[in-house]
Each structure stands twice: as structure tokens, then as C-alpha cells.
Length: 160
Image (cartoon, rainbow, N blue to C red; front, side, top):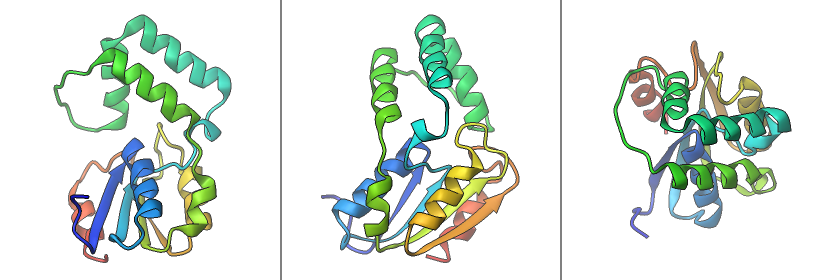
């Protein structure tokens, strides 16, 4: 494993779910987590109809839909290229992921940074994580799925 003992895991959105799994699997490796726009069960937040609609739009509109979605998730413009087939497979798997049963076993300090108006991962997800994790602190910011002013991330990291 490349992470040094005592590292801090930082995860945003899907990456936050991965960070939670890593903290569970390797509890002695990480001293803390910073999770931004996190969910332990994405499909628990949205109706089956909404999730199906998301996949249908992804199939039908491809890269254009992903650009629209990313503009809601991240407040600044960026260009990238996405393997559309890989993204579809990954999203289908992510929509099945439910790691809530792991949360009580995560011992590290967890800082939850969540936008009060997050259109991707509703604020209720942050409350669920806060209540299910043993050592969590919830920090909110006005806005959506990622802080518009990224300096808040560095400020929050100082408390780990």
C-alpha cells in the first residue's frame, strides 16, 4: 500500500465512499478522513425512477449529459475526457453500493464537509453519516456538491 501510516484520506463524492472503505479495511494506516459531499448509500438518497432516469440520460446523451452533471457537481469549468463505457459501468456499480453497515467500525476521526444545498448528494446524507460514525464532525458550507471557495478544505484539514 502506498499510503504512509498516519495519512489522512480525502474523498469527494464517490471518492468519499472509497475513503470510507479504505478506512474500514486498513484502520491502522489512516489517522483521519476528510469527506466532501459523501454518501454511504447513494441509491438510498434517490428513488429508483430517478436513478433509472440518470442512467437513461447517460446512455442517450453521453458526454453532453456528463458535462451537464459535472457543472452541477463542481462550480468551476474544467475539461477532461471520460471513457463513457467505463463511466457507465462504474456508476451502475456505485448505485448498488451500500456501506452503512461498515460505518460503526470506522474508528478514525472523520470530518464531513457538506454543502447545505448539494444537488447531487442531499444534505440528509451528511446527517446520516454523522449519526452513524463514532468520531465524526460535520462542517457545512453554503452551496452545492463541492465548495466554491476551496480554501475551506485546507482550513478543515488543519483540524485533523
